[in-house]
Length: 186
Image 1 (tube, rainbow, N blue to C red):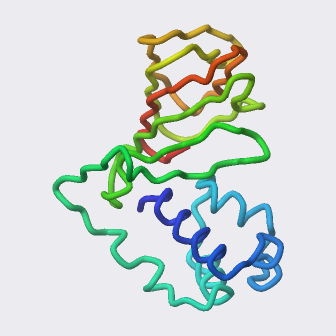
Image 2 (image 1 turned 180 degrees about the vertical axis):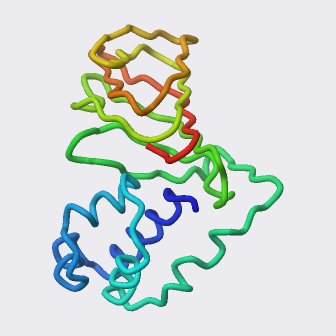
């Protein structure tokens, strides 16, 4: 299952109701921290948790899952129709633009990241799977297992994402990075 799309649907439904994470936690009986991790696709929610979330949002479970298993042969994302995905705002000010949101059941999750000058992810964090990144514009610092490498336009890295890692931008100009996740995203 595509966790990015599932998380996006849950967050969209919550925001359309005007609920905060605190309110959804209150209505569902689930911890706010768990709900935040679900919305930031850090945790795969259990079926009972999904049922409680759907009940709190006034939607059917089938509505949440509708179309998630469809797999079109091709998905073309126009530059002006990219889907921004908000992630870990308390840990990062990186903007994520999904490049393949039109194909829900995918094995890879490609994103264009905008890493603002002086910004990035504050703490290194691992996740399941593998990751590839290519600096498209500007420069970033890439921390992997405690070692920091400066990466400039054209530099790339392919790595095991289960090791603590992060990117940040100590420079004065925004940077753009192509990032592809394989396995459990982010």
